[in-house]
View 1 (cartoon, protein in one colour):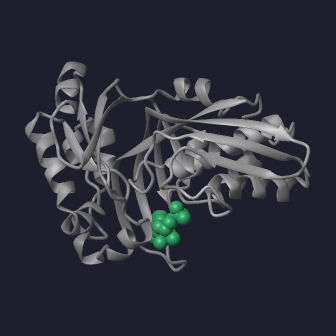
View 2: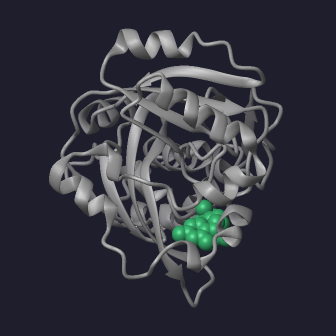
Amino acid sequence: MRIRSFAKINLGLEIAGLRPDGYHEIETLFQTVDLGDDLEVLPAGDGRICLEGDDASIPWDRTNLIFKAAEALRAETGTALGARIRVTKRIPAGRGLGGGSSNAAAALIALNGVWGLGLGPDRLKRLVTGLGSDTAYFLHGGLCLGRGRGELLTELDDPAPAFFVIGWPDYGVSTPAAFAAWKPSLTSPHKASKIKRFLEDGDFRHLENDLEATVAAGHPEIGRLKRSFLESGAALALMSGSGSAVFGLFADREKALAVKAMPVQNVTLVLTRTLTRKEYRNATGAGASPSW
Ligand code: C5P
């Protein structure tokens, strides 16, 4: 079985504060884009999970979220079946694009199918949430509001189609380090939600990423990319998640294509577009169960 595993960007990320469990209480808008990996998942009778991928910067061992997803599914159901999983990567790791989380959710959906387990949405959601804060989003796709750690999701209507030039420098950023560097003083706990304002009036200029300033302070490429997107006419330019990727939003494809062709040293630029929830579900099988 082949399954697509798409990237997300965060159209805004607000931090309300540190929680007693060490995580941060956030509000964010997730949006899937048409940058995606491919997973080939085959069942195996020998009980072994064999995982391989074509990106040498990623560990394809027990620490990989795909492996953890398979183990969680086996522990939940008691199945002794194994699997061969081969991943073709296009989403870079450590850039705030959700590649690892997306792969974990895709692996769960695929293994649920090829192992014939028939787990419904509630059990899949519980399993996937145990693997990370933004993993549950990948059972939905499209535009979603994320609250709590990012796992409490509300599906929103697809926005008007838009194009995103996504740029990432040749290094990643650690998510725990990015959150740990955030200072409460940088954000008033009582400020009105900018995401809420955006959802009311559709003005992208409200949106901010509360992790951006501290991460960008140590990584000048992030600020440079953001400025060049804005100077090129982007309606919105933000770091995605905990970085290091930055995206520029353009309504016009030709404009986005011209921006993607800009020569920027040590940065990879790709052109993507919004992926609707329906497109996401058709390509991944998320939500395919009749009881979803
Ligand atoms: O949940 P996940 O493993 O993706 O999170 C990685 C790390 O990012 C957490 O261990 C935590 O340090 C930080 N984090 C956070 N608040 C969130 C999400 C992640 O502090 N809402």
